[in-house]
Image 1: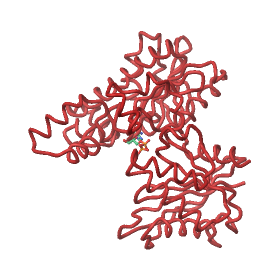
Image 2: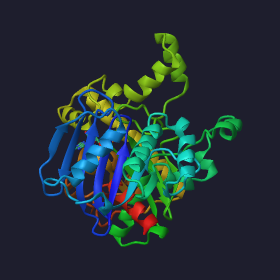
Image 3: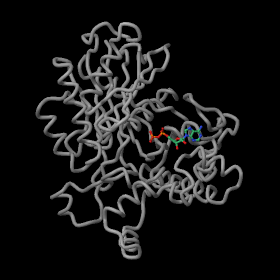
Image 4: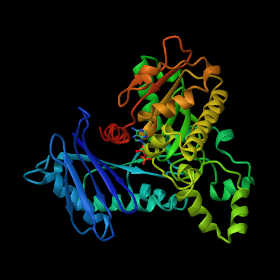
Length: 398
Ligand code: ADP
């Protein structure tokens, strides 16, 4: 059976067609600039050429139609008929407290996702539009929702509550939710399998370090804490997001610079993180790494601060789990940057961690980068959120 995995953003749509049994990617691509002039679809069939086609996409419905046309194209397509798609797995950013697992989408589920819109106003409405568009074009094909927040629903109250009046939790459900859940779940399980250990017996810390970045503590197969909060703004220093700050800073800047709350949120989400800390040099870690190697002061302070924050979270999660068996690095930076992994791991000697420098220079595959004598296994595990969504989708409709 073939599963179509769909990830809708406000103006983009990423897709992959995956064989549920062999887990091979049959085709993948991206629709960009939906609802904006100059929209295009990028499409790559397995073993074939990547093509870019400009086409009008006033809404996600046209985008999905173009994806389905590309998949069934007589020359470059990979299926003859849409009936070959057994189900569609949708990535949904926020499932609030309602969804601790992936679920088959019904009218009630659509309503429940809508109820979470307030918690993710940029993402959930786009996700819902994607589902509606698919339902329209593929009536009768089961649709599955896989939530970014679901894996973290196992966090205990003491980890998800904020130290603010409890009535805000009761009235508005203000609490820590955490994100990247599909990745944290996939990577932690993959690490246990790779080590040949029982997932349910392990204490694992996953560092998902990409443009958006988060750390999680996974104990006995359950997330017990994670660094992102009500929204993806909390926690680590990210590409353009600030991560943890003293909330008073917001009022201070607003006062000094004559800004309102929307301006401040924009600064914290789009102009902070490593972009802001490097004085606007770059939000891309490759640029920062190159400049770091040349000793550029702005990049040195930025990457040191980035790594330090990760080190602090690792320490906190070792404490939360009263130990750790494995630490995993994943996502763009975690999978590829030996420099960042080094900057982090050189401060973990207190855990008995020793890194094999030569092994750490490698990239792009499941591997252990700690030495045989290291008390804790340190691994690089490439994440694969699309595959994880396809697996969940298949599991639910099988
Ligand atoms: P997201 O999905 O949140 O957009 P990714 O997981 O794709 O992010 O990670 C993107 C980040 O990973 C970018 O900042 C990029 O510079 C960084 N990255 C990718 N490859 C490398 C590399 N070889 N060395 C250092 N950083 C890298």
